Image (cartoon, rainbow, N blue to C red; front, side, top):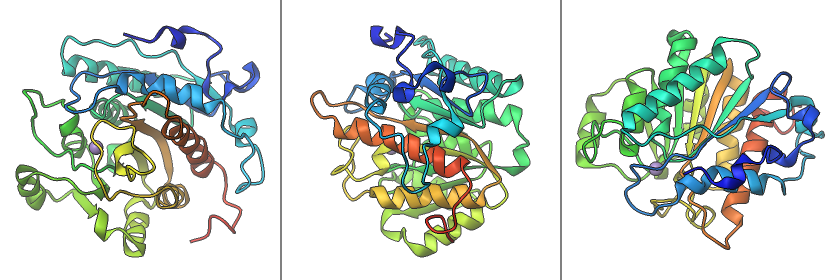
Length: 308
Ligand SMILES: [Mn+2]
């Protein structure tokens, strides 16, 4: 069920005035998808999009790294939350794919579409829709996640959240960062897959950043961020927390690297936020992450903070 509050027309990302939140002119569009059906452990991802929108109103619009208010030059339009179908996971994935396809099929289109999950299974739909509207030759996916998500099928569905990266890898090469949970079946598949590059958490460092830069250089990048890729000390509000995750600065470096080297990043998703009542820090982290990521992906670098 879509939370009632999301129906308020003025509940847009960052709480911007109308002229900065108009899809006709905004370079960033926010698409909430409060979908939760195949989550296996902690529940609550259906509440993720609303929590991010609420928390975003506390984000400082001035970004000292860029020396400006990115919201003013970019504009952020918040679309109505996608209607959810729970008939089958595949029906929902198809609905997501159709929405992404529509966004980029006719003007106005955003420079960056930010999809708010909801559970990670929606990413298979995002990739499917994107593959219909961009040259798949130049399309790659960067996945930040604790889990490899390479299962061919889980709990009876190939569109379970545990299969997200496997489905994406059928459409384009995938670069995985922060992984620290992979099953035997996934590891076996991984050893035979030639279009999936994985940096386990303990392997991530400067050489990984260089490999990432090479991977995205000149490409059209789909960035999927499962928030459980972050360390549970800063991101406890996820359905399946895994110890030993990435930290804030590391994630920002990943995003900056993509922003510098990629040809463009038409879509980013931020998924799996399962808000904990009374704990606002994770919701705020997700909201600020989206704002700063949009700035780093779309604004030109200033040569100091965005150097090599
Ligand atoms: Mn995950």
